[in-house]
Length: 497
Image 1 (spheres, rainbow, N blue to C red):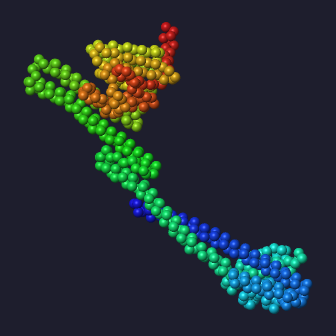
Image 2 (cartoon, helix red, strand yellow; image 1 turned 180 degrees about the horizontal axis):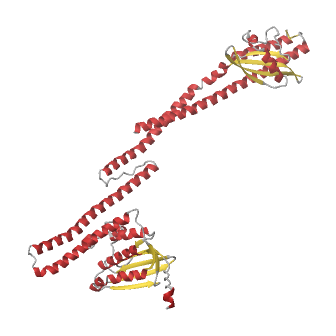
Image 3 (cartoon, rainbow, N blue to C red; image 1 turned 45 degrees about the vertical axis):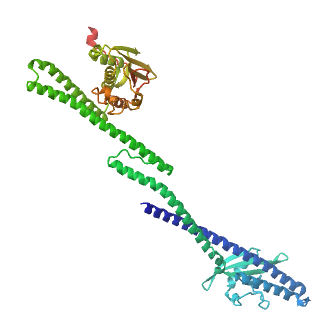
């Protein structure tokens, strides 16, 4: 995998570098060609100036002598030397023409290099070009002669503000592009160095990315085999990979807790199921084989009945949680008095409350207080909280039921002065299958009650939380306030009576 990624990325780098290098090369080539052409134009301007001086010498001095040489011959000789120098440097052929497009030969001294150059020139093109040159415009032509490309520049030469003719300078295209071809080596070197550097940087980067990804893959494989204790070490990887590693570790930690909870749940449910089943079987077998005398049957049958109720309650909790987890689970919303519901829950537990000599204090404000919720589900929540308060409050203790309404919400609180919840258990008190301090609560529940309560409140879009208290435990849940149901009007006949 690492090799494939490296190959693909390097191919992309090579392609991108090649394209950019080609663009840069052609840009440099065009720039250098333009620079050479500008130098040729400058040389043509100087030769045009010399041609003008030659014409001036012929006009003023004729063929008189100056320093032992005719003035016109001196100007023509200097022009010839200059043309030879341009040819030697640029391989350029030079031709001077008058206003009518005729070559100003002057004993063939004005032509440099190949004497057949004049025959290569299309005089019709020269005459067409002269129209622009006679207006004082410098022109540039790209021509093809016998399959060979040439660049031609034409520059006017002027005397007394009058265009007397033009200087045509023609250079083979390969001479101009020869300098650009010399850029291939440096450009190729830059490309090679760039690709090498990019490849090394990419190799280092990909190794830093692939290494933690490899560890993530190995950890995922271990997790698939059931090992949820794996952890990807924190490395100096890319931020995205570091975030992925952190998320993976968080997931592994949560899955580990879920797995531990599942194992605890299986062990707890197995124990809770085994206990009543063992008791029921033991007492029934004892009565059947005569171990328990007939006069004791009534007493032990009552115990069998209680254990059956306990077993039924456990199964009901499991079924309730399963039903709440279904996606199609729905609520039957209505408006009802939460104070009346709490009083009903309290009255149904009066036997246990009296047996434990518990003091229950109800503080409802306002009363009645109407809420909008699923009454059966909320009764299940209230019953669960009340049962927990009764279970974990010592004999002679106190339980407080409180109702408050504010800002469209009703808050119900169930508090006790019992053993409370240990600080280390508080974050997990709503976890499924979690039972705090098994040594003190064995046989008192499966750890599903509060999870069921939390799920019901989530379905209502509300919350349930454990409050901070100095003594005992206090749970509070919220509900949306509702409206007082309207009484149905009696029939007209009854109203008349």
